[in-house]
Image 1 (cartoon, rainbow, N blue to C red):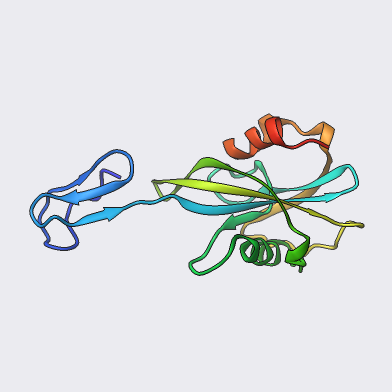
Image 2 (spheres, rainbow, N blue to C red):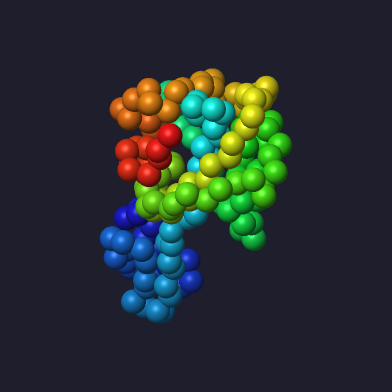
Length: 170
């Protein structure tokens, strides 16, 4: 965050980062907020098993992750769940069957920028395991894991680790 030093409004090299959420310029009073980004994670469940993906991108390449992603502007969290499951796995879901569970704070580093996120967790139950067509640029593979056999150390993000330790019960 400290790399951004030139004010985009007046061009002065005195843009100040408050080490939490905003830049400000003393010369022209410009303020730029770096607000929390919204994201979703979908726990796809079939019986006692849940679907996890293996990440093919940093951060946490090779680690396990719930399907999901960032909410786009003018998009609801439920629409994001539908879009992300389609983009990542080619699964078309009925958003009315999504069950909201909880939200948790998290951080996400992308191209050396730390984003604070609010991760919203949903459950989507299926009667049988769907066929996938994974997006190879994002996902290495998928795995169905018995919910009692999740190894927290293999999970990519702190919010998901905390979710599995605290909120998710079979």
